[in-house]
Amino acid sequence: MLLGVALLTAAPGCNRDDDPAKAGEAKRPSLEQALAEARARAPNRGDTVEAQAKILLANLHMARRQMVQTTDGEAERLPNEVVKLAHMGRSIVPLVTPELADPVPDTRYFMMEVLAEVGDHREQDEFIHALGDSDAGVVRVASEAIGRHRDAETVPVLFQALEEDRIRQIRWGPILTPPKPFDHDLVPYLIRRLADQRPDIRISASIALNRVTGEDLGFDPSGDEDNRRRAVMRWESWWTETGRTKLPEPAAPPKPATPGAPPPPHA
Image (cartoon, rainbow, N blue to C red):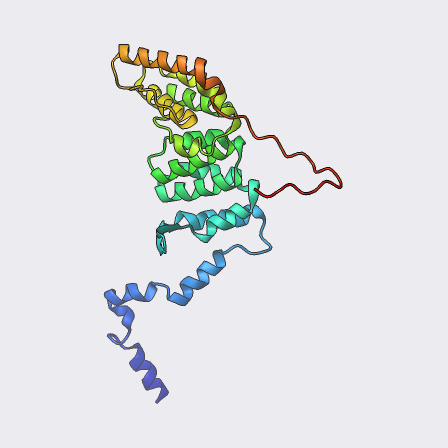
């Protein structure tokens, strides 16, 4: 009886592998196998930081952007790998930076999110280079990172990148917000940029001046040369007569209370 069953099972036409359509299904991993493989790729506590980071980076290559509904509208959900990589600190910068050249925009975006979190002014070149990315998300995150880490030399460096055609546009909003104490000193430099022969330089200078000073003074970057010259003269006069002293001085720190003195009245 057992032999008969064995022969029947092995008989032609009874084995599903003989059906080409079903043969492909048989080779596909089951859900349990797929989950087991994913767990095998997950970082282990005993792995080195580099090994863990490489696994997380490999997973990010397969990730795609996801939007979730919130009470305020849609928001973007970052993969857990981005958070885990950011927790590793600066040690992963050499691993993340080459990934910014990936052809997939989502991958570049996730990598820029990581670099913006763990990087600082030392990654300024990478952030500036990313301003020329074709993906708006990459440009936004890079602009915000430049704004957080910028110093008095950042704006001139950005204009140098514009002049060398390494970047084509600058998102001045996130870069110049919030204002910093040295921004006021950049006004004369920006006024000189208004007289540049290249329209993109004039446009950037005009936007940056408006962000720093809150003034417009009727400068039209696309206007004819005579009108632009007169507007530049207005800016120069404004700076000489008003702008130098327009911004308030930082508030002085409160003096320490004198022992035994009554507390100051509430405002």
